[in-house]
Length: 150
Length: 150
Image (cartoon, rainbow over all chains, first blue to last red; front, side):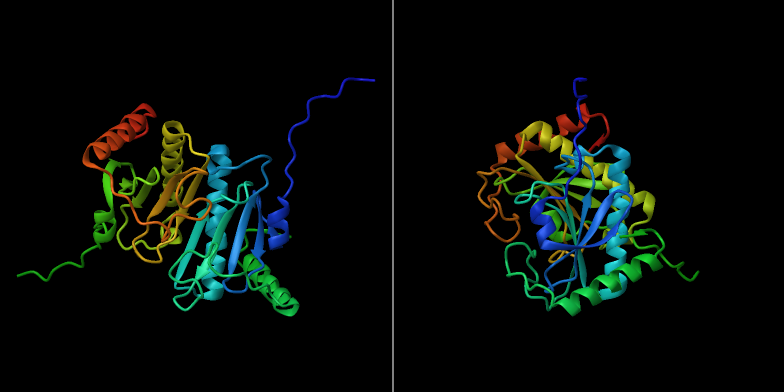
């Protein structure tokens, strides 16, 4: 028997993020997912980098690629949902795995003008609405011609 | 008399941001300022780009430069204040001028684990504490050798 070689850490999507969101696309660096809260069009980007917790944990090329994917997610939301404001945030106080929120906000949304976190109970999508929403996002992403489909 | 040429819009720091924060440094793209709330070590980056409201309003080179300046601000906070978590966010629901928060968070800070916005009244720095804090940040920035001093 050979001694086992040291294994590099492997990326696994955090269980809380997995249960709170639905897959939309696999971008070059991040998994792009839709948060299961129909109060807002709300995307989350999770860099597929094992053990990353902060943006400063990423190497420079990866960090800049994440910025480009944040930009893509924001442009999709702007194009499809015409928000009054976009909110972009990497917080991670509750879920330690690095993830970036990109949220379309409206002056009439239920948390406005406060941030969305911890204010209003999530309103999960109905199944048909979820299928429609994910499909619409995938279509818009493909039209922007930057992504591999999920 | 000549007709006036069309004038390019000029960047002016938003009055609310100016009154809520203190200058720390002028980075290549952003003004770096300390929020006047001693509850948390809290920096804010304001790209000196007239009329920018969203990260997607910036051209790509500027946006990536902002990402590098976010990284610098985050590394300064990590080095100087050893936070449990960094929070990075571009919200702008109340102040429309594009600005990015970089905040050092602790499990014992007064808003933890909630986001800081709109939870706890700001606790302005005492004058001596402000001078010490700004000087410490400027010293750390200079040591990281990336910035022109303010």
